[in-house]
Each structure stands twice: as structure tokens, then as C-alpha cells.
Length: 639
Image (cartoon, rainbow, N blue to C red; front, side):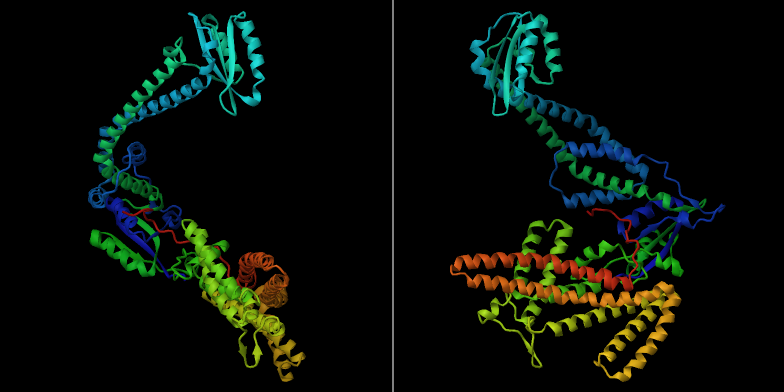
């Protein structure tokens, strides 16, 4: 449901503004508005607040964040962090930045140097592993390579599908080195071929330039490895790897020691800086005079006292909170605040598809939570299917519960499973007529009418039309309430006329068909005569045509019967085919496949059509939307 909102004005001395903002950010109840929208042109007393010209919070936040990212995380000490938080939260912007700069001066250079050394060591290790992998693959070719002084060895890696490029490289080397080279190749793995070439060092620049121009991957060994046998190179690589590993271990120990000493303070400092940075972004929404500040916002009525007490407890009479009177237009534009019961919250996901209701509108979320499961259960109406849907939803929610939308959609299916079981009990359906075939369950009989869906198609059709009449009329009634709340006389007349017009048409049809006493025909005509002028006054000539649209809306509810019948028939076909097979296993598999298909259809089709009945047939009678969601100014994470 949508909660009542209060518009408040907070006034206090400018010197306390930062502290007041800290309190509002901490309690997190105020949806801030831009005061500049209330400032009249030429007003010389109240002006827009300019951003603070104090210390640069954003700049130190970046540096602190970089330090935190460099240090390894430690287990949070909640008690210590709470103590540090209380020490830092009330510091002025200048005091907070000064504290941050002290920490930065202590840690920034050291952590950057350690991070650079660690990065260089990691890159060197990666390069060594690459050298080692290639040399191990081409080592069998070593016996064929001439080891001459003044010659250079280089390795080229080529994708095997482009192996033909070796011919181009060979021809170019013949020309560049005047045939003073050797080139041998071998497959490194399933995708790569390595070519080892030896050439005179005086052609080095020309050779490397050509290889680079061919866009192939050249592995150039470091100078200390050149001219050495490959087994000796591998030994050197292993020694270098051990040296780098020891160096990285020492670096990690230094970083861990710094983190052990500084992590708690850095985590809290970053949190406080994040909060201050976010607070600084809202200062332009405030107004100011020469000596005072003005803040305007919205607070849920039930949290107004908490907000006042929080400010009064710290600032006393220096900061005043005024509850403002609201015009109908202001009230209509108030932010909407959902606070639905737990069982209703999943349906907020479906409601969000239509945007937020306006503050003065009836919240339709609770109504959807009531009618949607009812419609779903009426269409599916099978105990066996309900159990499968319930198990499926519970399993998906367990696996993907971290994703809010999926979790809430599964919660909707879980809720819908229970009315599905109820209607399955009434209709005597357990995987279609399987329950009846096995003697486990039978349709309920009420006043001599057995609720077998195949046998009560006409009564069920009438029942769904009656549901449509109730739902549409209920929607029109809510439309009258919404219009009256906004004092929109034309809209009240239009909705009232539509209600009278639809009633008159239904009465006339029933009277002509001898379903109600003929004497009601005249009152029906009278209602139409009264309703039409009201509709035309509120909605014009086009509004009169909406009566036929209302009749169509009511008839749309017959899909509750039609989709249910389609599901029943498919379930019956599955059971019939399965039982007609001579091989029991084959029959079971056929029935299981058809029932599985039917269950999948039952999870999607009834959901879509139940949603359509709400959006098109029901909401169109009263819902406008276009509201603003309540977004209180508060910290994103709490300590």
C-alpha cells in the first residue's frame, strides 16, 4: 500500500548545514526536492545554495580508494570500525580531508611502489612461463641449429592455419641476410607452430622489422639467454622464477602487514568519504539566505516524528522542521512510498511494468496480489500441476535467489500454486483426469452441480463473465474514488456515467433474454438515459463509445474459462494416449511429455493473460500512473 507523505521544510543556521546534512543522510527518511523551483524570479532573499568551496572530497576519495584496492582485504572488526566511524562522521569537510591526507601521505607512495613491483614481478613471471613453454617445445630442434658467435636466435609463433606464411618469411630472410640464416619449424601444440631462425646480428634490425610487419608473434629471448644451450636457458628460467616468487612473497607480506595495521581505518574512512561525496552532490538543491539554509523534502507520515526528533536531539531549537500545507497539485506530485506486506511485495515487480502510481491514486499492487493468483488458479486448476509448479519455483528461487526479479517472479508462482490446488480440488483434477481414473479424487458437488470442467462449460462461462462484471465495475468504482480525491468533476461524471451505462446494457440484455423480470427493462433504459449525458460531459462524444469497450472488456474474462478448458483437454489427451499404449513404459513417457508441455504452457500463458486482464481491462478504468518513487537521501550501505 502507498503511505501518506508529509512535505517538510528544514531551516537552520548556515554554519550547521553540513552537520544537518550528515544527520539527514544517516537517518535516511527525507526525499529531497530542489528548492530553486520554489524561488521566485528576482527574489533577493532566498537563493540557490552553491557547492561548497572547501576541501576536495572527491580527490582524496580516489586516492584512498586506490590504497584500499592495493591492500589485501582483512576480516572486518565491527567493534573497531564502529568506534572509528563515530570519530570520523562528525568531522567537518576540512577536518575529514586533513585526516585523509595524513593517511595518504603515510601510505600512498609505499603502496604504489609495492603495487608496481608486484605488477612487474607478475609480468616477468608470465613472460618466463611463455619462454619456457616455447623452448620446451622447440628443444628437440636444438641439435640442428648452428651455434655461432655473432649470430642471433629468434622464435616466431604462427597459427597453424596460417603456416604457409613461413614460405614468405623464408624468402624474405634469403634476401635480407643474403642467405646467411637457418630456419627450422615444429608444432608447439594443436593450434601453434614455432619457427626458430638463426641469422647474423648485423641484419637484426631488418629481420625484426620485417617480422613485425607480417603481424606474427615473435618471441625474443632476453640478452642473457642468447647464445646459450636450451637446457641451460631452462635452468636460468627456473632460477629466475624462484627469485621472482620469493620477491612476490615478500611484497605480499609487506602489503599484508600494512593491511593488518590500516585496513579497519581505511575501510571506515572510505565509507565516510563516500557518504560526504554523495552529500556534496545535493547541496545545489538547497536554498540559502545570508545567514540560514532552507531544505525542502518529503517524509512518510509515520517517519515524521523520527526525523524531527533526530534533528532536535542534536541541534535543539537551532534547526526547525516545519510541516507544509499542500495544494491538490502538490499532493498529486508527492513521491510514492510502497510499504506492502511481505506476501504482496512480489507483485511490485509486475506493477513496476506500468510505472509508479501517483500519490493520490489507489495503490493497485494489493489488488493485483488478490486477483492475479485467483485468475491463475482458476485457469490451471490442477493439484498435480500445482505441486510441480511449486517445486519448480522453490528450486529456481534457491538457485537464483540473489537475482531480485527472478526471486520475486518465483514467489508469485509459489503464491499462485495454492489457489491452483484449491481449484484443482474443486474440479477433481490431478494431472487432468488421472486422479479420477485412479480413484484418488473426484469433483466437488455443490447443490447438485458436479464441478467437472468438461461438464460445466456453460455455467463456468457465465461465472467468468460475472467475474468480469465485478472486476470492471470495481475498477470504475476506484476510478470514481481517484477522481474525487483529485476533485476532478468531469472524471467523476465520466466514470459514474460509464458505471450506469454498463449496468443499463447488462440489465436490458438480460431482460430481453428473459433472464430477469421484464419489468426491469424500463429502469435499464432510464439508467442509460442518465448515464450517457454524464459520459459525454466528462469524456465528450468519444467517451460514449467507451461503453461498448466496457462490454468487450467484460467478455474478455471468458478467457479464464477458455484457457482452463484448453489445459484440461490437453491433460485428458495425455492420459488417453498414455493409457492406450500396450507398452507401459512408452505410454508413461508419452503422457509425461505431454503433461510437461502442458505445465510449461500453464506457467506462462495463464500468467500473461491474468496480467493482461489487470492491465487492459481493470487498470484502464482507474489507473493513470506517472508517479515518482520515494527515494530517500540515505547511505547505500550501513555499518
